[in-house]
Every structure is written in structure tokens, then in C-alpha cells.
Length: 242
Ligand code: PGA
Image (cartoon, rainbow, N blue to C red):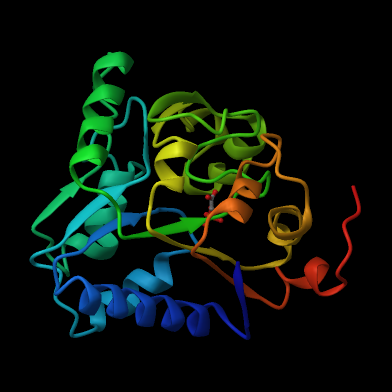
């Protein structure tokens, strides 16, 4: 795993832009990008939106979506992606799980077929405070493909800031699985701020365990971790404390 410790999220986002630019070049402007939502990638999307990069022949596949929110709902990830990126940088095609499809079997199979059809060249990830990636909460099997997830209290609490009240946060989501994420050719995971420091330590130095979904990234051959000083605090000490 390559680790870049940056001074600010803007510096981290600039590194992300450079990696996306390289992927575009390698794939002759026809790349498949796996995209994430949340607070972490917002700066990256702002910089991409302001850039000269052309995604009009690219595919975007998002990690996850809340069950029960439609794309007009400002808290849905479909709305987020349109707001922060797709309205400014058109892609040839974009995919996100359909949170309004209450038939989880049908929806998750549909999404797995999309992932089979379009192997991801570069996957962008954020990191949950509990070590989740996508909405793959602790305990999710490493072999998982797209599935419906019951969100943990920790994730509901962390995401409540985007909602009027925590009871408004949906209780479940559709998420690409860990196996789906690991199938990406290249992965960039970003984490900023001291609230992420413990999860970063377990991601980098801890045992590979389903208790920390992100720890599986230690076994991927092309992962770059971008962290600021606060998020890197516990890995700089170079030891694992449980
Ligand atoms: P955040 O979430 O970017 O809003 O901190 C990351 C995550 O939960 O994956």
C-alpha cells in the first residue's frame, strides 16, 4: 500500500485528480471509475468539476445508495453525485443502486451484472470511523458482492449530520460488496481528520479481519492511501494498540 500524508484535504484531492488523470490517459479517455459519496470526496469532485478533464466517454459506478430515498431526495447519493459532479462533468453513463427498488434480490443482482460488464479501473473510497468501506459494515464477509446492509448505530450517528434528525437516516442501504471493491484494478482511499485516525491505524497496521472491512485492502496489489496528519497520527507511531 502506498501512503501519502498530505497537509490538507485539498492537497490530497489534487493527488486524487492526478491519479484520475493518469487513468484517463492509460485508458485513452474511456475509463470506468468507481465513485464514493460522503464528506471526504467532495473536494475531489470540486476540483474535477473545475478541471479540463473529459469524462464524456467514461463510465461511473457508485458504491452505494440508501434504501428508500429517490434521486430527488437531497440526502440520496444519486442527488449528491448529480450535485457535486455529474451536473458539471457529464459521463457517458452513470450507475448507482436504485434505492427505490424494494426487491433487494433483483436490485443487487442487477448491480452485480453492471459491475461484471464494466470492470472498474480506479475506485475512489472514503473510510468509515468503524473501518467500513462503501456501506460494508464490520462483519461483512470479504466474499460479499452487492447486498442490502443494515446500517450500524455508529454509521447512522456519523451520517446524521446530513439529515434534520438522526431518526431520518435510513436504516439500510444497497452497497457494492467487499469482493466487488477488491476487483477494482486500482484503489484510492482517502481519510482526513482525527476521527479517522483509529480506523486508519487498523487499515494499515491491524490484522486483516472482517471486524475492520478496510483491512482487506492490505491484500490488494494497487492501493494508495491519502491521509492528512491528523488521520495519520496513529500510523506514524508505528504500532497497533487495540
Ligand atoms: P465521510 O464518510 O467521507 O463522510 O467521512 C466516509 C465513509 O463513511 O465511508
